Length: 84
Length: 191
Image 1 (cartoon, each protein chain N blue to C red):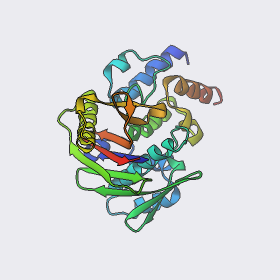
Image 2: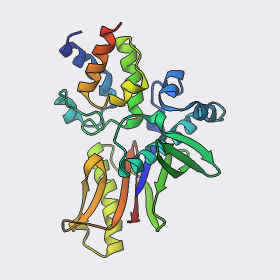
Image 3: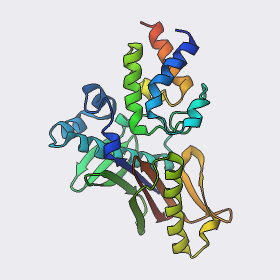
Image 4: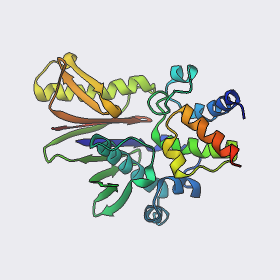
C-alpha cells in the first residue's frame, strides 16, 4: 500500500482518540501519538486493535512497543503487509 | 520520585475493545487477567490495573527506564491494600483508590509527606485541563514554600518528566500530574 494512502487510513483510525486538533491537522510522519496528539495511553491499545482490523494484520507486543509515532506505525504496518 | 495516574471511568469505558480477549492479551499478564475475569466488575479492575501500571511506569521512567509502550511488561500483584509492581529490575508499591467516577493510583519512593489532590475539571478542552492541573500544583507549591505562584514554572525535562522551578531554579520536590476525561490530579513530595 502506498505511504500516502496508508497515512490517510491511519488518520481515520486515530481521529476519534486525539486531543489536540491542531497537531492532528498538521500531522506528519514525525507526529508522536502521545506527546503531540495527546492521545491518552489508555486509548493506544484501542488504536493498535483498530489498526489490526483495518489492515488485517496481527501486531505482536514487540511491534506495539515501537509504535509511538506515525512513522513507526507506518513502517510496522508495511512490513507486516509485505510478509503476508 | 513520584508517579500518579487518573482514569475517568465514563471516558475510559467508551473503549471499543475493552474486555475483549485481544485487548486483555495486549495489556495484562495471565495472573492479572484472572483477577479481571473473577471480578464482579471487570471494567473497574481493568482500569485500576491500568492506572497502577501507568503510575509505576512514570516512576520507573524517572529512575532511568527508557520509554516504550509495553504495558504487559509491567507486572502487578495484589498485596493487601496495595499493588506490588515490577518491570525488569524496577519495583515499587502502588496505592489505588476508586469511586464510581474515577480511579486514582499513586506511588512514591520517598518516605516524606505527600500532598496530592484529585478534582473535577472545569473544561473539556485538553489544553485548559492541563493548565488547571498545573495551576493547582503550583498553588500548593506556592503555599508550601511561601513563594509567588506567578514565578513558579512547570517544565518537562527529558522523557517528559515534570519539574517545578522558581526563578529558573528547580524546587526540591518531585511531582506528577495526570488528567483524563473530566478529572485531574497532582501529587508532590519533597525530594
